[in-house]
Length: 465
Ligand SMILES: N[C@@H](Cc1ccccc1)C(=O)O
Image 1: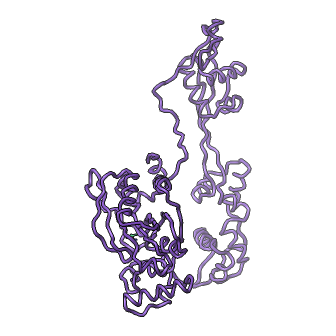
Image 2: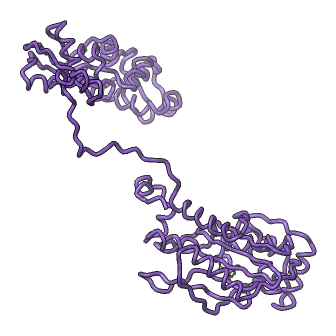
Image 3: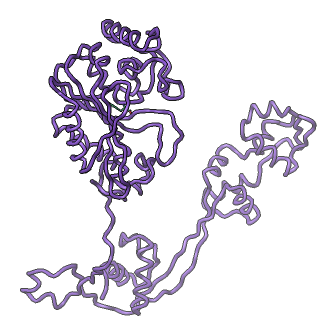
């Protein structure tokens, strides 16, 4: 049985009797490599004979060779610049640029010059190197003398290409039966299937790999979390990475000498931010000075940081004086740290806020239960915790099969010292969840850095969730 390609080749050979592989390739449109492999097959079937096989060397200018052919070889240029007179190395360097070292090297090797201190003195007034003549020959398809050719190749001005050719002759006249890819109803009805061959299929061969476009798996996870919060009645809000200390700390009742505000605990950004509504600023100042007992500085509050918690977005929402709201934000936060498999200097938090008349601590715990249940964590427990901006505060632990109880979030009712200066007089619940940790648990990622991987092979191996 003959393949389609074999038949094409045979049809050509039938007309010509004998042909070179290159000719066959040109007239059949098959790549040379395909022609070769098919000729080998046809030879093994005794249909064609390989008359001769030879390899032909051809020579071609390299990119540098082409350049030198146009502008002359460096040593030729050096001699022509010297023009029979001596010149200083510095002067020549300025004239010739980076070619000078090359020119000097070759001119010395060829004893075209002598060096005296920093003077270059030519021994010849004119010079045309045999290489240049060689380059010219190669460029018009001539082969220079072996000596010149060797130098040209060594100087990487010329490269050798080896082209194989094969002369093939048709020795057996076969009437190829047409090859069909599949059996059709018409072929069965007409009986024509008897006079054709069918292409055999290898049902075990791997299909070609077509990678599908898909989202980054960590992004997809974040999208899923967002969908969940929206389904629980929350509205997404967002803030900027660069934030004033006012919103990142002061409004959240973190005093200006709080350790988190030390220079090594948040990333400081050059410049100064703008403070919001003066009433709010005055209120925040008052509450800090009254309870923390220090003199609050506006300049400190204007300092810029990369937000260290998405609770800063919650603070911004509060500054709009909501009477009733359920909002959440999810995004990157930044904290200096030593990077390892479980720590990065940027990671994601999900912060939520509920402002509602009559919203109680119990309601908050139940909201958290709903969120974690939605995320697939059935068992959670609460431990008392401390945050400067909530009271009471809890730490939320979730139960994970292989790991036991894992800390997942901080939460609490916002203190009146936070809500009232902003003009919010209803109870407010807030929480912050570390998203990277959660994603690692869900996605079975051992190294946090893999969540941010850009390695295409790794990303392809991740399942779409
Ligand atoms: N922002 C806190 C978490 C938190 C948010 C909201 C309320 C209570 C706690 C943290 O980063 O640790």
